[in-house]
Length: 454
Image 1 (cartoon, one colour):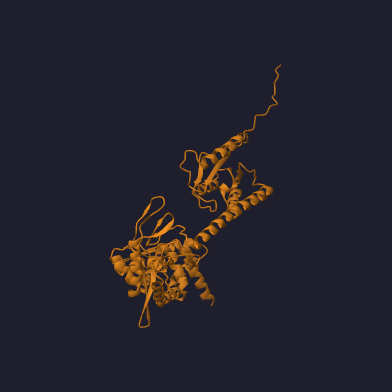
Image 2: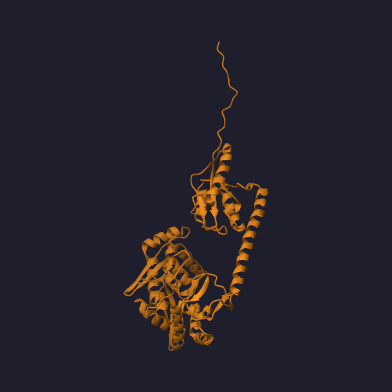
């Protein structure tokens, strides 16, 4: 007779592994070169906390998520972006930080992070503060503390801004790119005599020439450049050829009157003036008399330019912006290379192209694209609810529909179907794309439907 012994012991249930990602952040880069820095200290504390939860199955992931020299007031941080990507990929269960402000100092940004955590069933732990973001009380406590962290950050920002404003009212130099004519010595502006002579020359010549375009061409022809200077960390910034934009900023810079400007208010500066008040006032009067510049800006705002943002210069690689001129009361539109505008037409062999000609060529290419059999076959996939015969009929009516569209609607269609237009001295290269075809088909069919209903 045999007997059987039955054990009452059950096998131990294995502990579920909880994957923990440790995130560290430091606002400034100061001290990051040290062998053991703030990021290492944060990581060491977080790792110790994860080890203390080993019985719960907590294990650190191999990747390090460290942002050194990044503010907590923004989510634009490389390690944080990598962390969020791994969360979305399902590779992380718990995010561990030393303090909540390491993750974010903005309440709105933190709310976005918590939304990502919740969507992926990820919890958040601060090793110096007890939080459980899965409970309403934990969320309340977290939001209260985060509000104080944001308040502290805003107070610090206000203090910095107040100090900056007070320093400017005293005429102090508060950093940035030193203006042509001055050097920075012991945090103060001192006159650089050779450059100061150039600044005086620019003011005097502008009074005589009266044209920024001609003056820029003259100055560049004489070999003059913008200021060359060295940053605090020793990087050399070489001067570049002058542009009209640089020239207008120079002529508007009240630092040459010996003033320090803060938010539009001028204060007596610590530095000496380079330009006397009489010359300054004459230059401002000449600029005010150049009213065509203002009229040109107004005309550009009201004149249609459907290819704006699409046309580039093949020679310079610069954008070509809409421009115009009037002769005998007639308006002539162009797309002009930005280098030719800033440095003079002699600086670019392309210069400009007649707007009407290039726009007609592009529209012709778009019409040919919509007539192509392979594009029509692709269009059937983009509009599966539309019968092929109706779709083809709508595309056939494109030319009639195009003429009835407002300029803004025409520009939108071209922006969808045109990738880039490169203008060379001997012709133009037009690159089209079919990705925007779905939206264009919707526009065309909508226009056709409206016409049929009418």
